[in-house]
Length: 494
Image 1 (tube, helix red, strand yellow):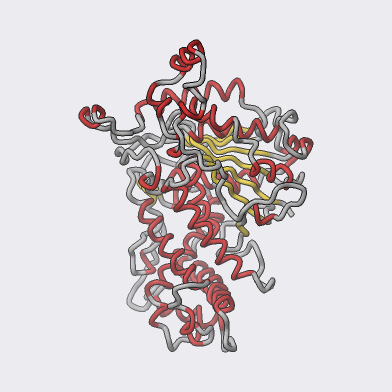
Image 2 (spheres, rainbow, N blue to C red):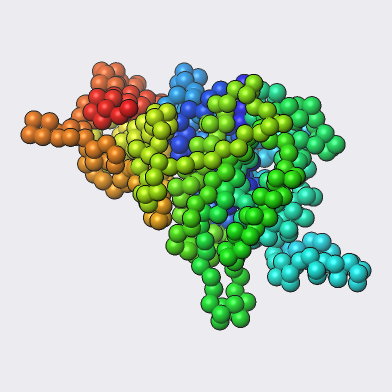
């Protein structure tokens, strides 16, 4: 069983994983992959980007597991088809077992960097050297906020932690047909520092980790995010008052330095994907904790597409001695992105499932609660479970709300995702590059049409006193069929 292990490093890694989870919910297929095992790497355990993504992935996993617990619903097909699991759920023998968590455990680092490196206990000569290497702000920075744009701090801390139990467990779990993928920014602190160290520890046979031959052989790729946003800068008064902030004016310099380092020292990858863009309006400057919760960005969605591309490359074409370097370009430089800017193969692989899921989400929220007399509602026992505050249907309702929030966020940046209209009530106008033509005798795609397809999908069968999981399967399978049908016949999307 081929698996994909993903290391998502820092806040940018978490945000890309958020978009990937939405794509998987829509039914994006990952080539030759039976199981996705994401691990978020960030010492700032309260980071808003991380906690939001963890909650989303847990919700996705709960829905997927409820859909497939009977073993009859085919995995890898349709909405929520791809299995998403934690490292601990692999139940690998021969190493210390892990808790059921998507997050790399840093052991609750809470002291300052100065205390972490025992600055006060060092000799005068050593303290002098440290004062040359690190600024006072870096030395006094609390590590539970992450590394706040300081990869030199991150490299020191992470170097002693990359052989923690999670890395040992992953190394023990690897099979030769698995793959590993890294996601990080290159202009911050945690990502820029953690990514090359994780690659080194995966590959280095001298590192005290299990299965060195498998670690050396398993294909690995990486998505590296170049600067694509900037942050608001504090006023002179706020600086004088000691307000904590990240200076995004240094992003380009840090990127150049990191690229130079990667060119000379980064080894062990078969494919590297680079993605960046001109920064738009500055974002709020929150160095960490719950306040660091950036709105979704188009580049994070496009970056997530590197993963199916990497998995689709045959092993015979992956050459570590001559790694492939990939970039992504749009057809033109318009500020608003729609599906028409994708090449035909990506429109089939990405646009169609996202359109289907959008129809699903909009009908589920707008119309389904009032369809109490329809076969889709009565036959599946939705009256018993649709308004529940816990269980699979409650998870689905929250996930749909999360999806709509994510879609709205994607439309707020200067480089906007405008392919789907999040608040459009008319199904004929929801897809930006392919509105459905209507006329006096042709109403196009209405809620009546979609209701009819849903009723046809379930036929005249009725579930006999269904539990919540069976109701969820009934509902999701019907929407899979109905939305595929209307995309084919009404939208006629190719």
